[in-house]
Length: 265
DNA sequence: ACATTGACCTGAGAGC
DNA sequence: TGCTCTCAGGTCAATG
Image 1 (cartoon, rainbow, N blue to C red):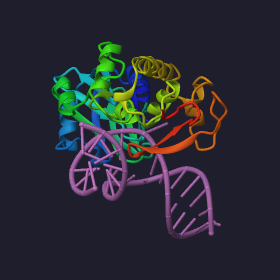
Image 2: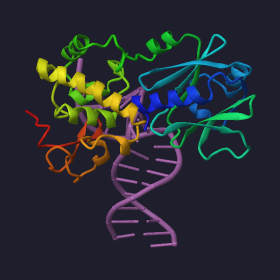
Image 3: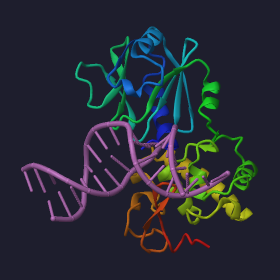
């Protein structure tokens, strides 16, 4: 689930629930989720008594500054999510890390597939650099000129390029499909070959899709009927032309697209 | 440089 | 019903 829109929704959720709560205890059920070198003991020790003060999202990462010097870093992998509620001893299935607050509530970091990260960093900016993350897809500094420049500097398939977190952070397999469908571009087109008009449309559609998805709370059911996502499956009908949606292997993932609306040339 | 593959995990769904 | 196979919204390392 967690690409940029999903993580933005998690951010809003955390803001509305766990923000300003004081951490009383941290329970780590799945140690492998912890950032390399971080022990459950250390996480607990460093967070105890701290309050969650401010959140920010960069790409697929959610960073939560505490009232101390450190920020909590969450990455959700493919199946991570958050759940806040009154603490009771039988935690939900798949809770990886549980942050208990002194008000009797707890924030669950839940992750079925255990691919994800819970970490603690001193310097958020430094962390983002260390992770080699590019500019956030919705950062105002990423204007259409910068976007085009990034595209021209590479010669990769446009889907691969959109998903490359070191160039633009936040877009994954699902939303790259939607953005490419809305821009009517074939996933395997090379970024170096895109015209100015195509790049400009791609930029606009990237914003449109991400904004729309956030407004829809990242729920495919709530997306406009012109969107691919709710029909992202082999043999489903294209919302534009009624043709069949096809899978194609691109970038080591399965891309779904409309061969009619998204021509290769 | 760029693309692909397999690994890391577990569950859901398809097919037999 | 139960088994086996494949696949899944993420990233990383190794390989062509």
